[in-house]
Amino acid sequence: MTDTLEHAGSGIVATGVRRAFGDVEAVRGIDLTAAPAEVTALVGPNGAGKTTLLLVLATLLVPDAGHVRVAGYDPVHEPDEVRARMGWSPDVFGLYDNLTATEYLTFVGEAYRLGRARARSRAAELLEQIRLPEYADRPVHTMSRGQKQRLGMARALVHDPEVLLLDEPASGLDPRSRVELRELLRALARSGTAVVVSSHLLGDLEELADRVVFVDGGATVGEHRLDQLPTSTAARPWRLRALDTDKLVKALARQGYDADPPTPAGVDVWLVSDEAAAELIAALVRDGVPVVACQPLGGALEAAYLELTT
Image (cartoon, rainbow, N blue to C red):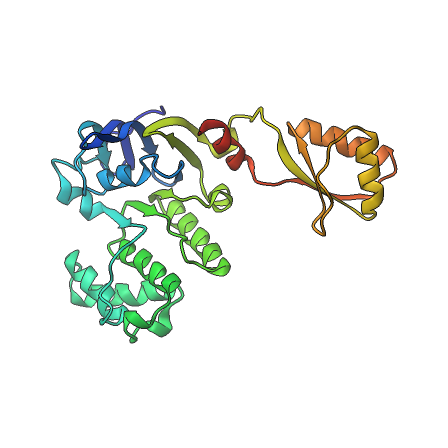
């Protein structure tokens, strides 16, 4: 567990969080630290307790045990202080479908006591930021699922929170919108916001996050910076491409590699490390194979996830 941050504006600190629903212990000892100016990824399989933890952080569930601080405040005893500083975008959320996007965001802004004039100007700023200015005066029900997802993000940002909690924020987004989301979250982190993202899109998280917390079975099983992920000991697939695929396949067979059948995308070989991949490339080049690409299928975050979770 990294050093805790106990003062106001200090992001999130959660230690030993437990929460049961009847006989089912959904969270049984999760630790999480999310520092300001960083994006922290919360990663784990379905049923690992990620959403339950986020609900605790968002003041929507009371933990059975543990120490929790969000922006320096206790979500149980100081929920109003937390909500004033925290933005929350759940995986599934309700919108007022008959309001226009401007009316909806203005309403939310006024609920945060921004005042009508500031709430309307903030709504216009956010619609530009999430690339939906053309929907300013259109009813929410005319939006696609991905557009509603972006509107939900704008709602979470109305009051310029210090801490941002996101549960599957890229769900329903097209590839361009996912890139724009990554850019937005990185910009928020650079401005000092503590961002926590729970997602199954590990490729996106690898490009976005500074740190990752792995949870499994309701408990934390690993917490690392993205550039310090544990090295996997299990073999994983690497994809090779060469100018002459037949020559590549024959060379792999001669050298004793059990490669998958070739496809238009290349030939997949299972290797245990980066060093093994480097040795293979050198051997192929010595064998006269015109190799043009060699890359792992799935990044280091995916490999660490598979290693740490069951």
